[in-house]
Length: 561
Image (cartoon, rainbow, N blue to C red):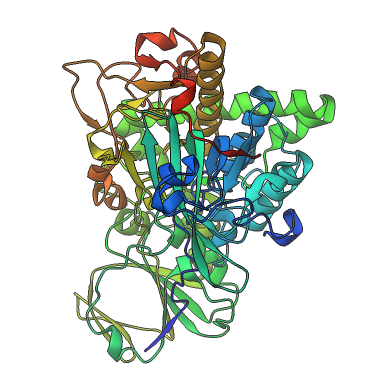
């Protein structure tokens, strides 16, 4: 058995590899701003407090660490959007974006498997400040990556990105009212050094996926398999599957993307699923959008189409949740009409759970159903018994012969890129915190995390969070405060941050912040509600506002940004 595309330290980002957006259905540095500032201006300081004061054994003779007003972690779709908001709504603030990889784009640069694309429309996945002008609504990964790069370049955000800089720890000092970040900086020659900088506000846009490793069940017999085994998260660029038999293990967004893409060159593709997933065909091109763009200027057309798509997506989600029986009938009817075989739909595309109990997979122009109908691919619902030299033996006893097996078995969750958080040197348990207005965490001063929607475009929620961060920063400045820390209400009922039954969520969600049972401690997965409430209301009602430390307590630092 050949394992192809094993993860490497360089390929897999943690803190700093921003999750790109609406899940890549499924799910670079130099030209976007030169080699970046990886480590530029950072100080190699063993003890941040001693180093900044110039006193003590670690600080003696060492330079002061750089201080920034805002640090954004992750240069993916969310991080670039956050950079735009900070520089436009907090124009006097210094900021930098720290990216652990050596490329801009986050998810959309990391994932390279065939057919990688968005399962959210680009009118809502794209930035509200930079209208989407392409004819395609459900865009391929390379198109999204180019959009992110172009946006960063157009607004000068690329010049703020420091590549190969991975935040491994962040410690808030109440005495100094600032964060101390410990970073691993990978130099161009491949060596890694520790670097320290400080900031007043820390905003992580690293998403919630572990980019070092996907979910990989321990299938028995893989060492006996004579073919090639690959995980899509680490797709090898030199894998030639032309004319070969391919089995894709999985039924989620990655699997339904891979099957039609692989079928263009493979001799045959089989999608092996343990259980079905709800799938909905959508047109890849938005005819309404095309008509609107012919009569309205780009900005106005973008707003109209964006609003239309927000309402449609939210309306369909509410329809599924409130009328699951009708939603089942609609989705199975659409599948049967395209496949032309209702029995296939009953056997392989009718899940036991209701629509939107787990994330619904979108397939542009029904490409998966069309390739199944053509005979170039098929679907098998069964369980893996063991790998054998010629392929996979199923629980039913059948053997699926394969030259290549792709384990599209899902992703793993990782809170905030895996950085270790602390307050005054004491470890901070993220799982014990409550999320405030979908972004800030109780007990953690001047900290926010970008967590997008699971039922709509990631960017819709991400942009609200970035605007909330700017509002909090400006509120502190106007009123002479140094920090804000959310304080939760008593007696709330705990709920998971992401309320879906999907396996990849259930395996890890207990390690994430929780949401409460009333606002502003809920995450309603409803853009209309969030748009009306996130940026409104009295910030002082649930935020403890902390005064600045006395001048003598503020450590000396070099300003940056």
